[in-house]
Length: 51
Length: 141
Image (cartoon, rainbow over all chains, first blue to last red; front, side, top):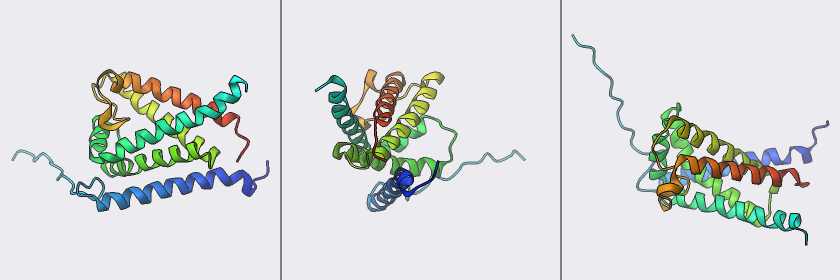
């Protein structure tokens, strides 16, 4: 089966959809007050070994 | 008009509206969606869950709009099938592990029985079946 541009079209369209969704998601997240991706991470609490 | 032709005209719109509604509901409160994702206790790193929480609602909205507008049909149906498979696996594992959580599919607009993992799993399978059925008869590439 020959790989033609027509045959590959859905795949690059899926790629465009993913990129657009990622771009819009990050853009809107940066713009919001309550940020999810760009928000402040909670510090990781590690257990301290007993002396 | 035969029943099959009627269904082929109506199913993409119903599928599109459902997916777009789910996307909009999540977009209204992304933090709630992120907290719901944490409740699933998936073996994924924190940044991956955060990227999913900000990207997935837009992807759903995009799929829904494209399906309703009958544009990029094959790509939109493939993406919807992929998302439905992802939802089926996620909600299925939550159901199997007996996690008591609200599925978060339609944000805060879904509560009680309809938000249970079992119902969400069944709904995801129905969406997947509809997307695959539509995809099989799509000539447009």
